[in-house]
Amino acid sequence: MSAAATSLQPVSIGTSTQLLAFAFVIMLVGSLTWWRTRVGHAHSDNEDREFFLAGGSLTWIYVAGSITITNLGTEQLVGANGNQMLLLAWWELAAVFGLLILAFVFVPIYYRYQCVTTTELLERRYNDDRIRTMISTLFLFGNLFISMPSALYTGALFLRSVFGIDLPLVMVGLCIAVLGAGYGVLGGLRAVAISETFSGASLLFICLLLVFLSLQAIGFDFSGIPPERLTLIGDSNSPIPWPTLLTGMLFIQIFYWSTNQAITQRAMASPSVREAQKGVLAAAAIRLMIVPAIVVLPGIVAYKLYGNVHDAAFGKLVGNVLPGWLAGTFAAILVTSVATHFVAILNSSAALYICDIHQKYVNPRASVRALNIAASAIMILIAVVLIPVYANAVSIINLLQQLNGLFSMPILSAFIVGLLFRDVDARAAIAAVLFGIMLYAYFTFVHAPFGLHYIHLMFVTLWSSIGFSLAVNRFVFGNRATFIRFWKRDKAEGPEVTFV
Image 1: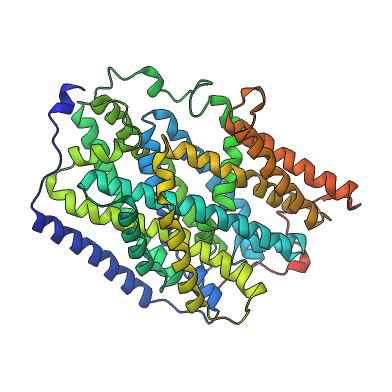
Image 2: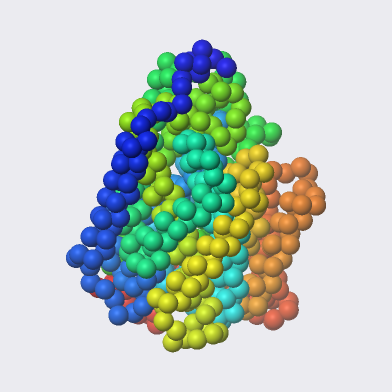
């Protein structure tokens, strides 16, 4: 450990001051959220649109803020910094590409079809509700067993490591989940987006402050850090070999930013396509100019100060370099950010279940408000129970990317085929999704051909799934797929949609 490290001591401030700062920020964000939710917004009579698309009322500022914090959770802050190398910035830099595809390709299409869920687009393109149900189920599975428990785990780990909370991770995670539910379950997406924007702006500011203070702690001197931790060109043994930037990385970003309900739901909640696009482009600018620094530089500094401490790097650094008077404030900002990040995924999961499954197969006239509360409670319980599963991961960010690969590329193949081709039987697309899941599972858990990196294998999985879909459509169902220009609106689809 360097001399700089030994001079840093853990945060220590008066308990009363810390609690007062914590309570003040929590109440401030909650009050601002309540005020902006109740004042100046016309509420829609359509319960689905009101709860899950904020009645089409989100201006570009809230779209940008909500998209930013929905993605920027402790999985990124803890997980990316846990690799303690500059290379992980590529996840954020490449995200700009995915956001541009969302803004200029997918947003106009979602508005054209007046979608509440991304999977509704599949139903419209294939003219079959079975593919919508299947993909929704896969999205739900990924949210329930991967995204939500990992968000609670990394949030709980961070809070416990920074502030010395002597409670089990499950208990801390449960508290985060309950706080998030208070923000979003009753108020729907409007409350979630507003609270995300307020807490997100604060989080970005304090994380930038952390970057500056961290660099100051090492005298802005990166000497002594291995060169492989300071490069953006990854070799074959690195988490992101540079050739993967040209293959699977691009399609991972398209899947995440353009078809993932938790992200696109915000972009679909504006009064018009143009307003949504402004919000998405603002989120892309934030992703390019701010986020890369806060997800890699603290981890690199932590390597110089403490050595290879993996996912504890971010929390350990925060506890040492932030001024004591900021501890309570930072705790509250972090708690609200983690909670709103979690409830954003929860809200999108509830939308998938209620709109795509319950209303179709159980009760089409069920109260959305009551069903949202019940479904959210069950999902929270599942996520909390699964927190210990993620406690043994060496790198949470790499584990999440590998697990997400089981569903991401097969699901993306269904969207690509549905948008690029006409006369494709939905059963062919469903078969291709199942084929892709099994193929990637084989690559991951049995044998990776030629020792290919998992990002390359995601690329292989995607195009294999697309080819499988078209082959089954032609040789099993006897349909000849026709290439179409999906960006051209058919006359039968009517004029562009604007919500008021």
